[in-house]
Image (cartoon, rainbow, N blue to C red; front, side, top):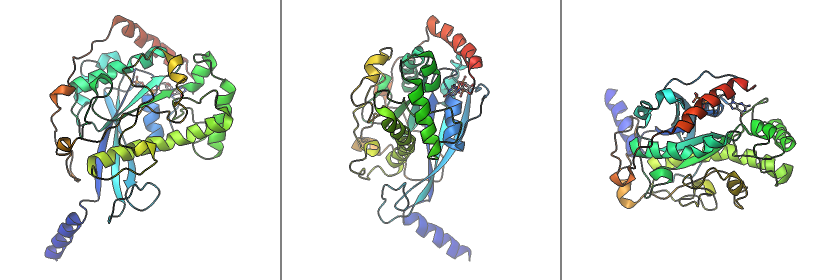
Length: 338
Ligand SMILES: Nc1nc2c(ncn2[C@@H]2O[C@H](COP(=O)(O)OP(=O)(O)OP(=O)(O)O)[C@@H](O)[C@H]2O)c(=O)[nH]1
């Protein structure tokens, strides 16, 4: 009996390998921008009204599938759908943990940057987050060339608190449009009702209601596509990306890179390609040599992979203005009603 079980297991591993795996995604941004809310939304489909401040780091896990059956498929020839876990490492943005949070930057497959649309400097500081992660982190399946701050893994940027930004007129966008678009999205069952956290960079003010609503729908799918792209890069690097699918395309021109001027919001939001590609994508196919760094599909935790030296950049240090901002963000947080 034992013998046959052993043979069965061996044959399963030979025919396509273990049925599951995991990728690790860091979720970073300044304190109070809504990282925990975002992780709750992704993992549980809803967000707590007042999440407590993250201490150090918390990890949410999203289950997804990848394979040749079902809508999530990107076609793995001769194989069935497999289970994967996306670890969302929600890093506290508080200054208190600045010196020790780098212990969590380990074996990263991708990064979600979050900023607050009503607090312009939270967007500016994403560059520093990127540089810090690039300088101190270790990476799984790193890219051929560094992204913002030298970051060698794919990333997306999510602008949160569109409702606050609209109310305060931070971006001069139409509050009505945002509200109507969100209600429309809720009605379609795409977001839980009373959901306050849009999974979108923004609702483009000029695109009209239908376009705005479509954006929201598309963006939610885009987050899952981002995860599947990370799974593919780690576990199926030889797979050809599906044609005409921007989110799994191996080379995407980012709408705006993090190393561009973040403070120039107007320039960013007027980007002609913004409405069709709301997420900043930076993906390149791994170089042949780097494929060796990608561990094979495995049931076990990721093995340490050395960071290539040319990805290392000087460690950034926070300025006094950010210190000030941090306290203002905290006070802002208490003002917000969700
Ligand atoms: N109005 C509004 N409030 C939001 C939104 N997203 C999150 N919040 C609120 O903003 C506050 C901070 O959210 P968190 O998710 O804890 O922020 P965080 O980035 O994880 O903060 P740290 O743990 O300090 O790093 C909470 O009170 C949330 O309820 C949003 O889209 N709109």
